[in-house]
Length: 81
Image (cartoon, rainbow, N blue to C red):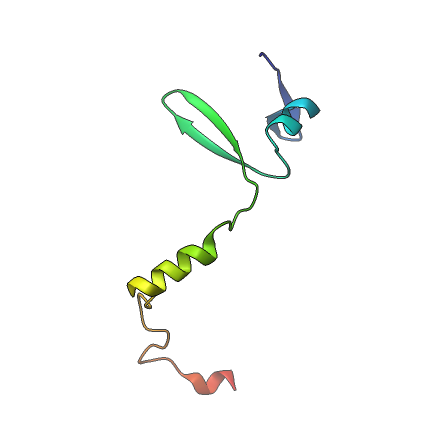
């Protein structure tokens, strides 16, 4: 399939037909993958899909610890009250 690049303001873009949008279940966002001279568009159905399951696994593995202290030694908490 061939399609034209169109001007959108100061940018350029692709226009996808309703048929393509429906067939590949493209709603509001797509993931753009740049790979070996190709551009791949992949529909994003739910940006946070499976996060709950992954967070649960992190907790079970003990991987859900802070990477740095949430309060620094020189932090003045008084200025926030």
